[in-house]
Length: 120
Length: 145
Picture 1 (spheres, each protein chain N blue to C red):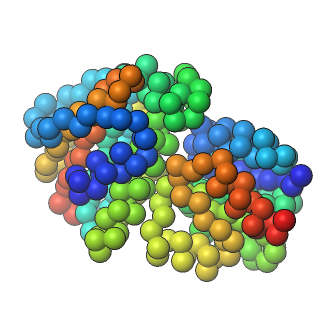
Picture 2 (picture 1 turned 30 degrees about the vertical axis):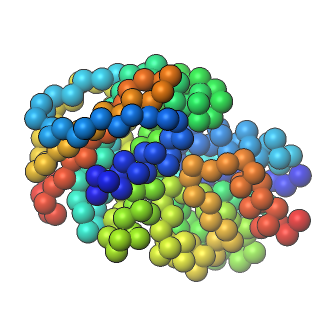
Picture 3 (picture 1 turned 180 degrees about the horizontal axis):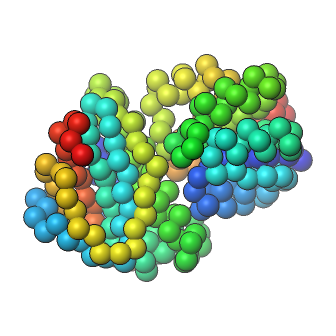
């Protein structure tokens, strides 16, 4: 079981991800609605991995990834976005994300990504 | 652009559907239970609007995610649906060399008066055993509004 922080501005998407990750045996230790909240919660909760949306108010996801990676270069972050152009995927990976899932996603794809990122 | 939006709708909502003929949007007042707007900027500039009845969106949620939705979670789902349609549209048109960025969705539950767009196209989509939603593409000249 790994500890996860879910970051998405949509309550519906946080609920779906929570259901999928809990079914996969993971513990959801926190949720955040934007990048700024994600940085604060990451610092306090120190999760094993993070699912991170991109298009969010206040602070978007790629900027949040950059800032989290400054404080923890080993952070495991999976981007989870409806925006999946090649250029955006490259930006996210360069920022430090370890995988990229395009919405709408399937349960198996999410759990496969988690396994890959955690090296299980 | 419209072709990519409709292709995105088919990809995001995997339910058999009849796509009706596009209409030029003439009535600036739209009234359904819920409307959701996602703005886009870049090589194209405007908004994608999805509108429909609560019961239709609730059934869409049930078909796509296995549970009927209501209240705040329904509104959140409608926003995310538009986000996914717009996001996948951006992927599809990026393959044609057109780059757009999208805004977070805005969900409205009241009658709306639409202003400030150059062209509007409305496409009703009838989903089997679910109901109808309306996809609207509003295009603006860059810099307007």
